[in-house]
Every structure is written in C-alpha cells, then in structure tokens.
Amino acid sequence: MAQERAVEPAASGRTAGLERPGWTVFTDAAGTRVDVPAGIFTEQVGPARRGEGVELQSADGRAKLMVYVEPNDEAFTPERFVRTNLKVPAGALDYRRITDRFFAVSGVNEGEIFYSRCNFPARASGRMHCIYVAYPQAEEKAWDDIVTRISLSLRGSRN
Image (cartoon, rainbow, N blue to C red; front, side):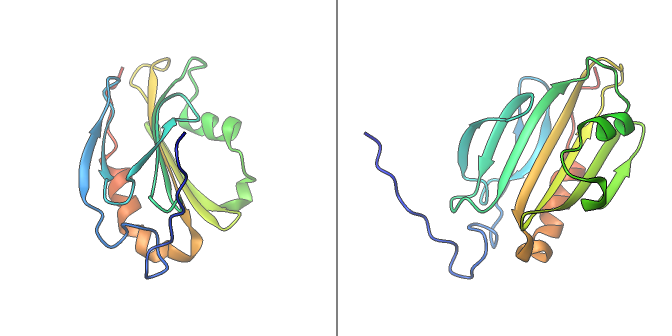
C-alpha cells in the first residue's frame, strides 16, 4: 500500500521550485513541443483532463500544468472555440488574445490564476496543441515570465 506524505509549501511561502525553474523541452507523439519548468512541475498527476496529454503539478500541489492535443472536429475558429468552451464568465478574464491561429486567455478563479492557450491547425479539422497553467493568485508576479515563456514556446504540427 502506498504511503501518503504531506508536502509543505516552499520555505518562502511560494510554490515549490519557483526559484529554480529548471527548463526542459517537452515533446509528445502528436508533435507538441513546449518549454516546461521541470524544476516546478515535478509530479505527473496523470492524463490531461481534456484531449490527449499529461497533467503535471508542483511537489506541493500549488501549481498545475496540462499539455495536451485536442481535435477540432467542429472546425471552430479560435474565437468560436473560446465562445463555446469558456468555463468561466467572460467578465472573469483579465487577458484575452485571439487571432486566426491561436487563442490565449487568463483570469482568476477561486484564488488561482489560470492561463490557457491553444494553437490551431492549418487545416480547420486538425488537432489543436494546448497548454493550461494554474497557480496561486498571490504569486502572480513570480509567474509572469514563466507563463510567458511556456506560452510563446508552444508549437505543434500544423496538420
């Protein structure tokens, strides 16, 4: 039987590993490629809650990252995808950028900042390559550069 262990937050009161992100490149069989701070996201939780991929979390459970691919069978544009799938009220978004090739949205929900981005395929019915990051709202400034690097590095096959 597996033994459970309690993990305390980092001594500074910040997410474990935040001081030393330890960047690596994550790739998968679907062609997704993204810079991931492996020094923060040290635990694999299991499969992503959306699409096909993986969910990771920090050792203290305060931050989460999903990297996944999702089919775009409905051939949604990024704008229509956000309009149809947004799980929080549009007014809860602090950041929203939508182009013909991707969307990125961010906001606060229950004390956590969330950031979601999906890059859309060249063909309307191909797969979207996506990330979702969530972390404590109190750590916003410490996460700004980290989330920016993750987001801007996201790549995937364009089919």
